[in-house]
Every structure is written in structure tokens, then in C-alpha cells.
Image 1 (spheres, rainbow, N blue to C red):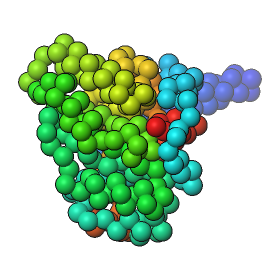
Image 2: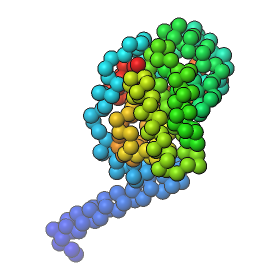
Image 3: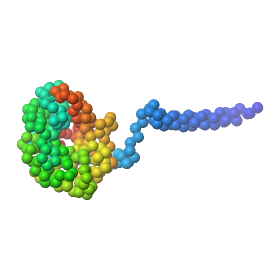
Image 4: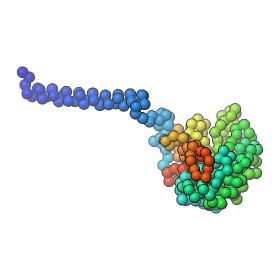
Length: 272
């Protein structure tokens, strides 16, 4: 018969072995559940994951932070953006029944397009007390000079509470070099005209593909229609997150884009 001391040592060895096997089994089980969909495990893109620890804690508060002359509504950190796709909006209902502070309105696109609801939306959204800004949809195949002319013909600084947005979602058929060069030229002209840098808009994947590490001294609104916040490969912060294109707002028929301010950013930082 095995001595008592030897049996006790063997018992301890078996306990350690079983514990290790159990941990291994749990890890394997979790991995299998994530593969089969029985459990949800977030596994971010590796380039993004490596950039996350490098996200700057210092937000660019100095950009456009010289004070705003228009109406800065501070009751909420939520906002919307609209165009002719939303039809005729009842702005009184929007203001009364929804916890939002700002609205960005589509004004122009390319060289000559003007949204046919822009003037109405601009007048009514400002009347009810929302902070209002306008956006231009960028067309890479159109010269920056033509697009600038369309912007300044229709977006008047005196009618704005917030800086304009340049909405950049397509590169078109131009080269990457020309795309960035022409966009840079337009941004410079817009800043000179309005006296402040415009807010830039794109969605997460497009930013990561074309803008990572560029336009560092601009604020960004980033679109990503999922539960997780956008993650940018250069680790930079962004002032707004457009988190859905299917928001529901009383006063607006159908879906509407919704966004929110991020972190400790404030609306006055994009005030005009």
C-alpha cells in the first residue's frame, strides 16, 4: 500500500492537472461558441486594435474654439442631419418632442446641385431654436473651385450657427493623389471664406482607407451604424459619431440620421 505522504502528493498533482485542463476546456469552449454564434465575442480589426492604445487623450479643443457667434443649443448632446429624403419636416414637433440640440442640413453637392428643401429646413430649424449647420456633398470628379462656388452661393455664414460640413464618401475615378490634393484645396478655400475650418464627415472604413493620419487639425464626424463606436486606424479622436441612418423622430416621416457628441467635446467647438 502507498504511504500516506505519497498519496497526498499524488492527490495535489492530480488537482493541479485537472484545474489546468478545466481552464483549457473553458477557453476552447468560448472560442467554439464565438465561431458558431452561440456567444458574441468582439474581435476588432488588428490594425484598429493596435491603434486603440495610442488614441490621444488630448482632444483638439483649440480647433474652431474661438467662440461661436450663433445659437449654441446645449440642452442635449444629440443631433440629426436631413435632406430632401425626409420630405417636409414639422420642425415644431421635432423641437418639442425630441431631445436634440443640433441639425445639419444638406445644402449643396458637386458643382451645381442645391437641395430643394434646404431653404425651408434652414429657416424652420433655426426658428425653433436648434443649432443649425449646412453640409456639402463632395464630388471628387468636380474641381474644388466649382464646388467652392456652389457652396458660397448657397451657404451664407450669417445663416449658420455651426461650421459647414464637407461630406466625403466617394473617391470616384480620380487617383489617390489628386483626390487628396483637390480636397485639401477645397478645405483651404472654405476655411478662408468662413473664417473657421469646416467639419469633415466620412464613415469608418472610408476614413481608414483614405484619411488615416491626414487632416489632423480638423474635427471629424464619423459614421458607423453598429453598437460599437467607430475605431480609426490612426487612433485619433472624433467630435461626433453618426450612429444610425434609421433613427425615428417625431415630426419626420421615415428614417433620419442621428448623431451624438463624443467624450468631453462640446457643440461650441464647431460653432461658427
